[in-house]
Image (cartoon, rainbow over all chains, first blue to last red; front, top):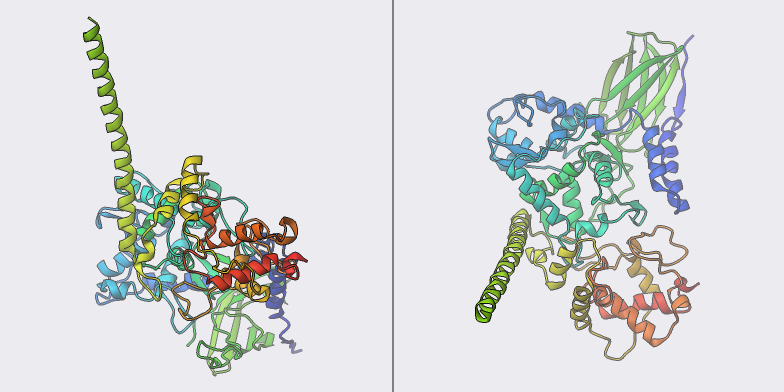
Length: 276
Length: 103
Length: 212
Protein backbone atom coordinates (compact mmCIF):
# COMPACT_ATOMS: atom_id res chain seq x y z
CA UNK A 1 0.00 0.00 0.00
CA UNK A 2 1.28 3.40 -0.86
CA UNK A 3 1.96 5.59 2.09
CA UNK A 4 2.04 9.29 1.79
CA UNK A 5 2.42 11.98 4.35
CA UNK A 6 1.74 15.59 3.62
CA UNK A 7 3.42 17.90 6.02
CA UNK A 8 2.37 21.43 5.35
CA UNK A 9 4.88 23.52 7.27
CA UNK A 10 4.92 20.99 10.12
CA UNK A 11 8.47 19.70 9.76
CA UNK A 12 9.81 23.16 9.05
CA UNK A 13 8.12 24.15 12.32
CA UNK A 14 11.46 22.93 13.68
CA UNK A 15 12.61 26.34 12.60
CA UNK A 16 9.79 28.01 14.52
CA UNK A 17 10.57 25.86 17.54
CA UNK A 18 14.19 26.88 17.36
CA UNK A 19 13.13 30.48 16.99
CA UNK A 20 11.18 30.13 20.23
CA UNK A 21 14.18 28.53 21.92
CA UNK A 22 16.27 31.53 21.02
CA UNK A 23 13.49 34.06 21.65
CA UNK A 24 12.51 32.71 25.07
CA UNK A 25 15.72 33.67 26.87
CA UNK A 26 15.51 37.11 25.27
CA UNK A 27 11.95 37.59 26.49
CA UNK A 28 12.97 36.64 30.02
CA UNK A 29 15.86 38.99 29.65
CA UNK A 30 17.87 37.99 32.66
CA UNK A 31 18.33 34.23 31.92
CA UNK A 32 21.53 33.28 30.20
CA UNK A 33 21.49 33.76 26.48
CA UNK A 34 24.34 31.26 26.48
CA UNK A 35 22.01 28.50 27.71
CA UNK A 36 19.47 29.22 25.01
CA UNK A 37 22.11 29.21 22.32
CA UNK A 38 23.64 26.00 23.65
CA UNK A 39 20.22 24.33 23.38
CA UNK A 40 19.87 25.72 19.88
CA UNK A 41 23.21 24.22 18.91
CA UNK A 42 22.22 20.86 20.36
CA UNK A 43 19.02 20.82 18.37
CA UNK A 44 21.03 21.57 15.26
CA UNK A 45 23.40 18.62 15.67
CA UNK A 46 24.35 17.63 12.19
CA UNK A 47 22.54 20.66 10.86
CA UNK A 48 25.11 23.45 10.97
CA UNK A 49 24.86 25.13 7.56
CA UNK A 50 28.63 25.69 7.81
CA UNK A 51 28.93 22.14 6.46
CA UNK A 52 27.68 23.41 3.12
CA UNK A 53 30.64 25.85 3.07
CA UNK A 54 33.01 23.08 4.15
CA UNK A 55 31.88 20.91 1.24
CA UNK A 56 32.21 23.78 -1.23
CA UNK A 57 35.62 24.66 0.21
CA UNK A 58 36.89 21.12 -0.22
CA UNK A 59 35.87 21.23 -3.87
CA UNK A 60 37.62 24.58 -4.31
CA UNK A 61 40.78 23.25 -2.66
CA UNK A 62 40.91 20.33 -5.08
CA UNK A 63 39.81 22.07 -8.27
CA UNK A 64 42.35 23.49 -10.76
CA UNK A 65 41.80 27.26 -10.87
CA UNK A 66 43.37 30.57 -11.74
CA UNK A 67 45.47 31.43 -14.79
CA UNK A 68 47.83 28.55 -13.95
CA UNK A 69 44.93 26.08 -13.74
CA UNK A 70 46.39 24.41 -10.69
CA UNK A 71 44.62 23.18 -7.54
CA UNK A 72 45.58 24.26 -4.02
CA UNK A 73 46.64 20.74 -3.10
CA UNK A 74 50.31 21.73 -2.91
CA UNK A 75 49.59 24.77 -0.70
CA UNK A 76 51.75 24.69 2.42
CA UNK A 77 49.73 25.82 5.45
CA UNK A 78 52.68 25.27 7.76
CA UNK A 79 52.71 21.50 8.15
CA UNK A 80 54.03 20.77 4.67
CA UNK A 81 52.62 21.10 1.13
CA UNK A 82 49.04 19.86 0.99
CA UNK A 83 48.78 18.96 4.69
CA UNK A 84 45.41 20.36 5.75
CA UNK A 85 44.67 18.20 8.78
CA UNK A 86 45.57 20.06 11.97
CA UNK A 87 47.07 23.04 10.12
CA UNK A 88 44.69 25.67 11.52
CA UNK A 89 45.68 24.86 15.11
CA UNK A 90 49.23 26.02 14.33
CA UNK A 91 48.33 29.33 12.72
CA UNK A 92 49.34 32.15 12.58
CA UNK A 93 53.00 31.30 12.04
CA UNK A 94 56.13 32.49 10.28
CA UNK A 95 56.58 31.33 6.70
CA UNK A 96 60.10 31.41 5.32
CA UNK A 97 59.01 31.58 1.68
CA UNK A 98 57.13 34.81 2.38
CA UNK A 99 59.46 35.92 5.18
CA UNK A 100 56.51 37.01 7.26
CA UNK A 101 53.96 35.81 9.76
CA UNK A 102 50.66 34.82 8.15
CA UNK A 103 47.25 33.77 9.37
CA UNK A 104 45.17 31.24 7.44
CA UNK A 105 43.45 33.82 5.27
CA UNK A 106 46.57 35.67 4.19
CA UNK A 107 48.22 32.29 3.54
CA UNK A 108 45.32 31.20 1.31
CA UNK A 109 45.69 34.45 -0.64
CA UNK A 110 49.43 33.70 -0.93
CA UNK A 111 48.78 30.22 -2.33
CA UNK A 112 46.17 31.48 -4.77
CA UNK A 113 48.74 33.94 -6.07
CA UNK A 114 51.85 31.71 -6.04
CA UNK A 115 50.30 28.39 -7.09
CA UNK A 116 47.27 29.40 -9.09
CA UNK A 117 48.76 32.53 -10.70
CA UNK A 118 46.06 34.95 -9.59
CA UNK A 119 46.84 38.61 -9.05
CA UNK A 120 46.75 39.62 -5.41
CA UNK A 121 43.67 41.74 -6.09
CA UNK A 122 41.81 38.77 -7.61
CA UNK A 123 42.98 36.41 -4.88
CA UNK A 124 41.60 38.76 -2.21
CA UNK A 125 38.36 39.55 -4.00
CA UNK A 126 35.04 39.10 -2.21
CA UNK A 127 36.36 37.81 1.11
CA UNK A 128 32.94 38.09 2.81
CA UNK A 129 30.02 36.49 1.00
CA UNK A 130 26.67 38.12 0.51
CA UNK A 131 23.96 35.66 -0.48
CA UNK A 132 23.99 32.72 -2.84
CA UNK A 133 24.64 35.01 -5.81
CA UNK A 134 27.77 36.55 -4.23
CA UNK A 135 29.40 33.55 -2.64
CA UNK A 136 32.91 33.95 -1.25
CA UNK A 137 35.46 31.33 -2.27
CA UNK A 138 37.76 32.41 0.54
CA UNK A 139 35.04 31.83 3.13
CA UNK A 140 34.45 28.32 1.81
CA UNK A 141 38.17 27.54 1.77
CA UNK A 142 38.49 28.76 5.36
CA UNK A 143 35.51 26.61 6.40
CA UNK A 144 37.09 23.53 4.81
CA UNK A 145 40.60 24.03 6.18
CA UNK A 146 39.41 24.85 9.70
CA UNK A 147 37.04 21.86 9.75
CA UNK A 148 40.12 19.67 9.30
CA UNK A 149 41.43 20.94 12.65
CA UNK A 150 38.33 20.05 14.63
CA UNK A 151 39.36 18.59 17.98
CA UNK A 152 43.04 19.46 17.52
CA UNK A 153 44.61 21.36 20.43
CA UNK A 154 45.59 24.95 19.63
CA UNK A 155 49.36 25.06 19.33
CA UNK A 156 50.46 28.42 17.93
CA UNK A 157 54.25 28.77 17.92
CA UNK A 158 56.22 31.68 19.29
CA UNK A 159 59.65 30.44 18.22
CA UNK A 160 60.56 32.84 15.42
CA UNK A 161 61.42 36.45 16.33
CA UNK A 162 58.81 37.72 13.87
CA UNK A 163 56.18 35.59 15.60
CA UNK A 164 57.15 37.11 18.94
CA UNK A 165 57.07 40.59 17.45
CA UNK A 166 53.59 40.08 15.99
CA UNK A 167 52.34 38.81 19.34
CA UNK A 168 53.74 41.85 21.16
CA UNK A 169 52.30 44.28 18.64
CA UNK A 170 48.95 42.47 18.67
CA UNK A 171 48.82 42.83 22.43
CA UNK A 172 49.50 46.57 22.19
CA UNK A 173 46.79 46.93 19.55
CA UNK A 174 44.33 45.15 21.79
CA UNK A 175 44.57 48.05 24.25
CA UNK A 176 44.79 50.83 21.65
CA UNK A 177 42.11 53.40 22.35
CA UNK A 178 41.00 55.42 19.36
CA UNK A 179 38.26 56.66 17.11
CA UNK A 180 35.35 58.89 18.00
CA UNK A 181 34.29 56.68 20.89
CA UNK A 182 37.71 56.00 22.52
CA UNK A 183 37.11 52.27 22.08
CA UNK A 184 39.81 49.63 22.28
CA UNK A 185 39.25 45.87 21.98
CA UNK A 186 39.75 45.88 25.76
CA UNK A 187 36.80 48.25 26.24
CA UNK A 188 34.37 45.40 25.57
CA UNK A 189 36.62 42.39 25.96
CA UNK A 190 38.61 43.29 29.06
CA UNK A 191 36.36 42.10 31.88
CA UNK A 192 34.55 38.95 33.01
CA UNK A 193 30.80 38.57 32.88
CA UNK A 194 29.90 41.60 30.75
CA UNK A 195 27.53 41.85 27.84
CA UNK A 196 26.44 44.36 25.19
CA UNK A 197 22.63 44.41 25.12
CA UNK A 198 22.04 40.67 25.50
CA UNK A 199 25.20 39.48 23.77
CA UNK A 200 27.67 37.96 26.24
CA UNK A 201 31.23 39.17 25.76
CA UNK A 202 34.27 36.93 26.20
CA UNK A 203 37.07 38.38 28.33
CA UNK A 204 39.90 38.09 25.85
CA UNK A 205 42.54 39.17 28.37
CA UNK A 206 42.20 35.79 30.10
CA UNK A 207 43.26 32.39 28.80
CA UNK A 208 39.78 30.90 29.25
CA UNK A 209 38.13 33.77 27.45
CA UNK A 210 40.56 33.64 24.54
CA UNK A 211 40.21 29.85 24.32
CA UNK A 212 36.42 29.89 24.26
CA UNK A 213 36.26 32.70 21.74
CA UNK A 214 39.05 31.85 19.32
CA UNK A 215 38.18 28.16 18.95
CA UNK A 216 34.67 28.95 17.70
CA UNK A 217 35.57 31.02 14.68
CA UNK A 218 34.83 30.69 11.80
CA UNK A 219 31.16 30.18 12.47
CA UNK A 220 27.88 30.17 10.60
CA UNK A 221 26.32 33.42 11.74
CA UNK A 222 22.56 32.83 11.60
CA UNK A 223 21.87 36.57 11.58
CA UNK A 224 24.12 36.91 8.53
CA UNK A 225 23.13 33.65 6.84
CA UNK A 226 26.84 33.19 6.08
CA UNK A 227 29.94 31.54 7.45
CA UNK A 228 32.03 34.35 8.93
CA UNK A 229 35.76 34.09 9.43
CA UNK A 230 38.13 35.61 11.94
CA UNK A 231 39.20 38.33 9.51
CA UNK A 232 35.51 39.23 9.22
CA UNK A 233 35.15 39.31 12.99
CA UNK A 234 38.05 41.75 13.34
CA UNK A 235 36.76 43.87 10.46
CA UNK A 236 33.29 44.10 11.97
CA UNK A 237 34.59 44.91 15.45
CA UNK A 238 36.56 47.86 14.10
CA UNK A 239 33.53 49.09 12.17
CA UNK A 240 31.54 49.17 15.38
CA UNK A 241 34.46 50.83 17.18
CA UNK A 242 34.01 53.68 14.68
CA UNK A 243 37.50 53.05 13.26
CA UNK A 244 38.21 53.25 9.51
CA UNK A 245 38.11 49.93 7.64
CA UNK A 246 40.57 47.14 8.48
CA UNK A 247 42.31 45.89 5.33
CA UNK A 248 41.80 42.15 4.66
CA UNK A 249 44.92 40.17 5.55
CA UNK A 250 46.75 43.29 6.75
CA UNK A 251 49.60 43.15 9.28
CA UNK A 252 47.40 44.57 12.03
CA UNK A 253 44.79 41.86 11.43
CA UNK A 254 47.51 39.19 11.60
CA UNK A 255 49.06 40.69 14.73
CA UNK A 256 45.73 40.69 16.57
CA UNK A 257 44.99 37.17 15.37
CA UNK A 258 48.42 36.08 16.59
CA UNK A 259 47.78 37.56 20.02
CA UNK A 260 44.39 35.88 20.45
CA UNK A 261 45.24 32.55 18.81
CA UNK A 262 48.37 32.13 20.92
CA UNK A 263 46.39 32.95 24.08
CA UNK A 264 44.02 30.15 23.11
CA UNK A 265 46.78 27.53 23.12
CA UNK A 266 45.87 24.26 24.78
CA UNK A 267 42.18 24.37 23.96
CA UNK A 268 40.79 21.96 21.35
CA UNK A 269 39.68 23.75 18.21
CA UNK A 270 35.91 23.55 17.89
CA UNK A 271 34.94 25.07 14.58
CA UNK A 272 33.35 25.83 12.27
CA UNK A 273 30.71 26.58 14.88
CA UNK A 274 27.29 28.20 14.78
CA UNK A 275 26.45 31.57 16.35
CA UNK A 276 23.42 33.84 16.41
CA UNK B 1 21.78 23.56 -10.94
CA UNK B 2 21.69 24.78 -7.37
CA UNK B 3 24.28 23.93 -4.72
CA UNK B 4 24.29 20.33 -3.43
CA UNK B 5 22.51 19.30 -0.25
CA UNK B 6 24.26 17.53 2.56
CA UNK B 7 22.30 14.40 3.48
CA UNK B 8 22.93 11.89 6.26
CA UNK B 9 20.80 8.78 6.71
CA UNK B 10 21.19 6.42 9.65
CA UNK B 11 19.38 3.26 10.63
CA UNK B 12 18.16 3.51 14.22
CA UNK B 13 16.25 0.45 15.31
CA UNK B 14 13.61 -0.23 12.68
CA UNK B 15 13.57 3.35 11.38
CA UNK B 16 15.80 5.46 9.22
CA UNK B 17 16.73 8.92 10.53
CA UNK B 18 17.45 11.42 7.79
CA UNK B 19 19.10 14.83 8.28
CA UNK B 20 19.31 17.23 5.37
CA UNK B 21 21.04 20.57 4.99
CA UNK B 22 19.89 22.56 1.97
CA UNK B 23 21.62 25.57 0.49
CA UNK B 24 18.93 28.11 -0.35
CA UNK B 25 18.32 31.84 0.17
CA UNK B 26 14.68 31.24 1.24
CA UNK B 27 13.79 34.88 0.58
CA UNK B 28 10.36 35.53 2.08
CA UNK B 29 9.24 38.17 -0.41
CA UNK B 30 8.43 40.53 2.43
CA UNK B 31 11.81 42.19 2.91
CA UNK B 32 12.66 45.53 1.37
CA UNK B 33 16.06 46.58 0.09
CA UNK B 34 17.88 49.78 1.02
CA UNK B 35 15.96 51.66 -1.68
CA UNK B 36 12.60 50.48 -0.31
CA UNK B 37 11.92 48.01 -3.11
CA UNK B 38 10.50 44.64 -2.11
CA UNK B 39 12.98 41.80 -2.58
CA UNK B 40 11.08 39.16 -4.57
CA UNK B 41 10.20 35.86 -2.95
CA UNK B 42 12.62 33.06 -3.73
CA UNK B 43 12.13 29.94 -1.70
CA UNK B 44 11.70 26.20 -1.85
CA UNK B 45 8.07 25.25 -2.43
CA UNK B 46 8.16 21.45 -2.43
CA UNK B 47 10.37 18.83 -0.84
CA UNK B 48 10.13 15.12 -1.56
CA UNK B 49 12.10 12.24 -0.11
CA UNK B 50 11.96 8.73 -1.53
CA UNK B 51 13.29 5.35 -0.54
CA UNK B 52 13.13 2.30 -2.78
CA UNK B 53 10.81 4.21 -5.10
CA UNK B 54 8.38 5.02 -2.29
CA UNK B 55 7.74 8.60 -1.15
CA UNK B 56 8.59 8.81 2.54
CA UNK B 57 8.21 12.56 2.96
CA UNK B 58 6.35 15.17 0.98
CA UNK B 59 6.36 18.76 2.15
CA UNK B 60 5.10 22.12 0.96
CA UNK B 61 7.22 24.96 2.21
CA UNK B 62 6.52 28.66 2.37
CA UNK B 63 8.27 31.82 3.52
CA UNK B 64 8.35 30.69 7.18
CA UNK B 65 11.26 28.37 6.56
CA UNK B 66 14.70 29.76 7.38
CA UNK B 67 17.60 30.36 5.03
CA UNK B 68 19.83 27.30 4.49
CA UNK B 69 17.16 25.08 6.02
CA UNK B 70 17.89 22.03 8.12
CA UNK B 71 15.36 19.23 7.76
CA UNK B 72 15.31 16.24 10.05
CA UNK B 73 12.81 13.36 9.78
CA UNK B 74 12.49 9.61 10.12
CA UNK B 75 10.57 6.88 8.38
CA UNK B 76 9.90 3.25 9.21
CA UNK B 77 12.00 0.80 7.31
CA UNK B 78 15.22 1.08 5.37
CA UNK B 79 18.36 -1.01 5.57
CA UNK B 80 22.05 -0.25 5.55
CA UNK B 81 23.36 0.31 2.06
CA UNK B 82 20.01 1.36 0.60
CA UNK B 83 19.60 4.85 -0.82
CA UNK B 84 17.44 7.78 0.23
CA UNK B 85 16.80 10.51 -2.33
CA UNK B 86 15.78 14.05 -1.46
CA UNK B 87 14.53 16.58 -4.02
CA UNK B 88 13.40 20.13 -3.82
CA UNK B 89 11.94 22.64 -6.23
CA UNK B 90 11.61 26.37 -5.68
CA UNK B 91 9.25 29.07 -6.88
CA UNK B 92 11.63 29.98 -9.72
CA UNK B 93 11.50 26.42 -11.00
CA UNK B 94 15.06 25.74 -9.87
CA UNK B 95 15.52 22.24 -8.51
CA UNK B 96 17.99 19.97 -6.85
CA UNK B 97 18.15 16.23 -6.14
CA UNK B 98 20.74 14.48 -4.02
CA UNK B 99 20.98 11.08 -2.41
CA UNK B 100 22.62 9.40 0.53
CA UNK B 101 23.33 5.84 1.54
CA UNK B 102 21.78 4.59 4.76
CA UNK B 103 24.53 3.89 7.25
CA UNK C 1 90.91 63.18 53.10
CA UNK C 2 87.49 64.77 53.44
CA UNK C 3 87.75 66.37 50.01
CA UNK C 4 88.61 63.01 48.42
CA UNK C 5 85.71 61.27 50.16
CA UNK C 6 83.41 64.04 49.03
CA UNK C 7 84.71 63.83 45.46
CA UNK C 8 84.23 60.06 45.39
CA UNK C 9 80.77 60.40 46.90
CA UNK C 10 79.65 63.07 44.45
CA UNK C 11 81.18 61.16 41.55
CA UNK C 12 79.26 58.06 42.64
CA UNK C 13 76.04 60.04 42.95
CA UNK C 14 76.53 61.58 39.51
CA UNK C 15 77.41 58.20 38.04
CA UNK C 16 74.34 56.66 39.66
CA UNK C 17 72.17 59.47 38.35
CA UNK C 18 73.54 59.01 34.85
CA UNK C 19 73.03 55.23 35.07
CA UNK C 20 69.50 55.57 36.39
CA UNK C 21 68.68 58.39 34.02
CA UNK C 22 70.19 56.39 31.19
CA UNK C 23 68.23 53.27 32.17
CA UNK C 24 65.01 55.22 32.35
CA UNK C 25 65.65 56.69 28.94
CA UNK C 26 66.34 53.24 27.46
CA UNK C 27 63.20 51.65 28.97
CA UNK C 28 60.86 54.42 27.89
CA UNK C 29 62.78 54.53 24.60
CA UNK C 30 62.03 50.83 24.06
CA UNK C 31 58.42 51.38 24.98
CA UNK C 32 58.15 54.33 22.66
CA UNK C 33 59.69 52.19 19.90
CA UNK C 34 57.15 49.40 20.43
CA UNK C 35 54.33 51.92 20.44
CA UNK C 36 55.69 53.63 17.33
CA UNK C 37 55.85 50.25 15.58
CA UNK C 38 52.27 49.53 16.63
CA UNK C 39 50.98 52.87 15.38
CA UNK C 40 52.84 52.51 12.07
CA UNK C 41 51.39 49.05 11.54
CA UNK C 42 47.90 50.26 12.40
CA UNK C 43 48.08 53.14 9.96
CA UNK C 44 49.19 50.88 7.12
CA UNK C 45 46.48 48.33 7.87
CA UNK C 46 43.40 50.52 7.62
CA UNK C 47 41.88 52.52 4.82
CA UNK C 48 39.29 55.23 4.99
CA UNK C 49 35.71 54.39 4.23
CA UNK C 50 32.56 56.46 4.36
CA UNK C 51 32.83 59.02 7.12
CA UNK C 52 35.63 57.13 8.89
CA UNK C 53 38.88 58.79 7.84
CA UNK C 54 42.37 57.71 8.83
CA UNK C 55 42.68 60.54 11.33
CA UNK C 56 40.46 58.47 13.61
CA UNK C 57 43.58 56.44 14.34
CA UNK C 58 45.38 59.51 15.75
CA UNK C 59 45.28 59.50 19.50
CA UNK C 60 44.78 62.53 21.73
CA UNK C 61 46.55 62.68 25.08
CA UNK C 62 43.73 60.97 26.98
CA UNK C 63 43.60 58.07 24.56
CA UNK C 64 47.37 57.72 24.59
CA UNK C 65 47.63 57.73 28.38
CA UNK C 66 44.72 55.35 28.81
CA UNK C 67 46.15 52.94 26.24
CA UNK C 68 49.18 52.53 28.51
CA UNK C 69 46.93 51.97 31.53
CA UNK C 70 45.07 49.14 29.79
CA UNK C 71 42.37 47.63 31.99
CA UNK C 72 44.09 48.52 35.25
CA UNK C 73 43.05 51.42 37.48
CA UNK C 74 45.23 54.43 36.68
CA UNK C 75 47.46 55.60 39.54
CA UNK C 76 46.02 58.56 41.49
CA UNK C 77 48.23 61.27 40.03
CA UNK C 78 47.70 60.14 36.46
CA UNK C 79 43.94 59.85 37.03
CA UNK C 80 43.82 63.40 38.38
CA UNK C 81 45.78 64.69 35.40
CA UNK C 82 43.43 63.01 32.90
CA UNK C 83 40.34 64.21 34.76
CA UNK C 84 41.63 67.77 34.85
CA UNK C 85 42.40 67.77 31.14
CA UNK C 86 38.90 66.59 30.33
CA UNK C 87 37.02 68.79 32.81
CA UNK C 88 38.45 71.75 30.91
CA UNK C 89 36.97 70.38 27.68
CA UNK C 90 33.35 70.49 28.83
CA UNK C 91 31.06 73.07 27.22
CA UNK C 92 28.27 73.74 29.68
CA UNK C 93 24.88 74.91 28.28
CA UNK C 94 24.98 78.72 28.04
CA UNK C 95 21.52 79.14 29.57
CA UNK C 96 22.23 76.72 32.41
CA UNK C 97 19.31 74.48 31.38
CA UNK C 98 20.18 70.81 31.57
CA UNK C 99 16.90 69.10 30.77
CA UNK C 100 15.13 68.48 27.44
CA UNK C 101 12.53 65.96 26.27
CA UNK C 102 12.74 62.46 27.79
CA UNK C 103 10.79 60.86 24.92
CA UNK C 104 13.54 61.94 22.58
CA UNK C 105 16.10 60.89 25.17
CA UNK C 106 14.77 57.33 25.08
CA UNK C 107 15.11 57.30 21.29
CA UNK C 108 18.71 58.46 21.59
CA UNK C 109 19.38 55.80 24.24
CA UNK C 110 18.00 53.08 21.95
CA UNK C 111 19.76 54.27 18.79
CA UNK C 112 22.89 52.26 18.10
CA UNK C 113 23.83 53.90 14.84
CA UNK C 114 26.02 56.90 14.23
CA UNK C 115 29.65 57.56 13.20
CA UNK C 116 30.31 54.10 11.76
CA UNK C 117 31.49 53.93 8.17
CA UNK C 118 28.35 51.92 7.44
CA UNK C 119 26.14 54.73 8.74
CA UNK C 120 24.67 57.46 6.59
CA UNK C 121 26.60 60.60 7.63
CA UNK C 122 23.31 62.50 7.47
CA UNK C 123 21.42 59.79 9.34
CA UNK C 124 20.48 59.32 12.99
CA UNK C 125 23.25 59.45 15.56
CA UNK C 126 22.46 57.92 18.93
CA UNK C 127 24.25 57.31 22.19
CA UNK C 128 23.41 53.61 22.30
CA UNK C 129 23.06 53.79 26.10
CA UNK C 130 21.32 50.44 26.25
CA UNK C 131 24.38 48.74 24.81
CA UNK C 132 26.02 49.16 28.24
CA UNK C 133 23.36 50.30 30.72
CA UNK C 134 19.98 49.39 32.10
CA UNK C 135 17.68 52.42 32.02
CA UNK C 136 13.92 51.83 32.01
CA UNK C 137 12.27 48.84 33.66
CA UNK C 138 10.52 47.95 30.41
CA UNK C 139 13.65 47.51 28.32
CA UNK C 140 15.04 44.08 29.17
CA UNK C 141 17.58 44.08 26.37
CA UNK C 142 20.32 46.02 28.13
CA UNK C 143 24.05 45.61 28.58
CA UNK C 144 26.15 45.40 31.70
CA UNK C 145 29.40 47.14 30.78
CA UNK C 146 28.17 50.14 32.78
CA UNK C 147 26.12 50.32 36.00
CA UNK C 148 22.32 50.32 36.00
CA UNK C 149 20.79 53.77 35.59
CA UNK C 150 17.33 52.63 36.57
CA UNK C 151 15.67 55.18 38.89
CA UNK C 152 18.61 57.51 38.30
CA UNK C 153 16.94 60.75 39.38
CA UNK C 154 14.73 59.08 41.95
CA UNK C 155 17.73 57.60 43.80
CA UNK C 156 20.19 60.45 43.46
CA UNK C 157 17.88 63.44 43.63
CA UNK C 158 16.64 65.83 40.98
CA UNK C 159 18.65 68.89 42.10
CA UNK C 160 20.77 71.18 39.89
CA UNK C 161 24.13 69.91 41.20
CA UNK C 162 23.25 66.33 40.34
CA UNK C 163 22.00 67.44 36.92
CA UNK C 164 25.22 69.30 36.25
CA UNK C 165 27.32 66.29 37.24
CA UNK C 166 25.33 63.98 34.97
CA UNK C 167 25.53 66.46 32.10
CA UNK C 168 29.28 66.63 32.51
CA UNK C 169 29.49 62.87 32.66
CA UNK C 170 27.70 62.41 29.36
CA UNK C 171 29.62 65.29 27.79
CA UNK C 172 33.01 63.94 28.86
CA UNK C 173 33.04 60.94 31.19
CA UNK C 174 36.85 61.06 31.46
CA UNK C 175 36.50 64.22 33.55
CA UNK C 176 35.01 62.15 36.38
CA UNK C 177 36.53 58.69 35.92
CA UNK C 178 39.89 58.61 34.18
CA UNK C 179 40.18 55.91 31.50
CA UNK C 180 36.51 55.01 31.75
CA UNK C 181 35.01 52.77 29.05
CA UNK C 182 32.34 55.40 28.38
CA UNK C 183 32.62 57.51 25.21
CA UNK C 184 32.90 61.31 25.45
CA UNK C 185 29.62 62.12 23.75
CA UNK C 186 29.88 65.90 23.87
CA UNK C 187 33.60 66.47 23.45
CA UNK C 188 33.83 64.08 20.48
CA UNK C 189 30.80 65.62 18.78
CA UNK C 190 28.73 62.45 18.91
CA UNK C 191 25.70 64.10 20.48
CA UNK C 192 24.53 67.70 20.17
CA UNK C 193 23.80 69.85 23.19
CA UNK C 194 20.08 69.34 22.69
CA UNK C 195 20.51 65.59 22.47
CA UNK C 196 22.44 65.53 25.74
CA UNK C 197 19.65 67.57 27.35
CA UNK C 198 17.13 65.00 26.10
CA UNK C 199 19.18 62.18 27.64
CA UNK C 200 19.31 64.23 30.87
CA UNK C 201 15.52 64.42 30.84
CA UNK C 202 15.37 60.65 30.48
CA UNK C 203 17.44 60.42 33.67
CA UNK C 204 15.93 63.34 35.63
CA UNK C 205 12.37 64.03 34.53
CA UNK C 206 10.15 62.67 37.33
CA UNK C 207 7.73 61.57 34.59
CA UNK C 208 10.44 59.68 32.71
CA UNK C 209 10.03 55.87 32.66
CA UNK C 210 13.51 55.64 34.19
CA UNK C 211 12.12 57.12 37.42
CA UNK C 212 8.98 54.96 37.63
